Length: 356
Image (cartoon, rainbow, N blue to C red; front, top):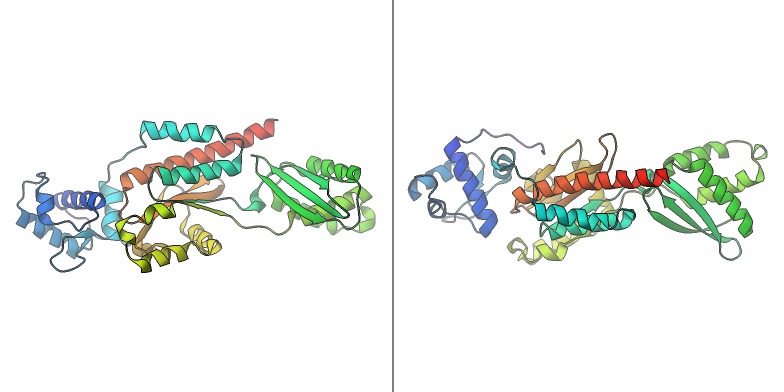
């Protein structure tokens, strides 16, 4: 879980009341009164006694009172204590599990589509914003590369990754080349570079370029030139976002300034990816709430996220972003399951492609 300032744990009875306040607030969206907790009839306490407990929880930093005479709402510390110590351990429901497996099974051979489906599932099953940070292009493992002649010195480069990602780029050759020459170069690069990441291929080509041109035969020299153009700069990770319109209907976004801040959050995707990558680290699900981060504090949002890939090498991250009043019992296991399932799907796709 996310690192945050630790507070002394409330007593067992107080913890139960804190849990009921959080459940009631998540359900209603309204500050919770002591009377509302007393009506649950789980504590054997009067409304006045519960009010005193809630005041103690406020003093400890777990609850807050938005305005005088209002009920209480959870703070970031209250949510964190709930998630770490009070929240029932749950897995995703069987219907949701079957839905996820069915949706992913149909797109296992198309990595780009797979990422889009996962983003959609995050939104569909949480009613929040779904986010998927896709792997940097430089980490893509090449399966095949083909150059197709267009006109004059122009050629279309088609790169196919292990796992099915397809990247198309139009390049200009140093001199006009025939279709047969381009086929020979395509075959050479596929045979010698298949199984390497694009970053590794670039490093390999830089080593070849350092040699005297006279040492390179004509096909290899042309292959180096074309590949250098085709691979280009090391593009950073991408970001898929879905569900912004879903959270606009929630009461937390009833004021225009907050809607504007939400829109601004997604204006600079490169900056958002940078912030997400800074927040991620290690294994498991991280929960960032409100004041924990600049990303969440201005909106009073939460981010529930995890990485996907292998234990040795995370390829990217995915998560759910929305008002802090989210159903963590549902969202945390959903993010955990989709992160693990996406990593397994990518590995299975890679194994299938490698065996072909």
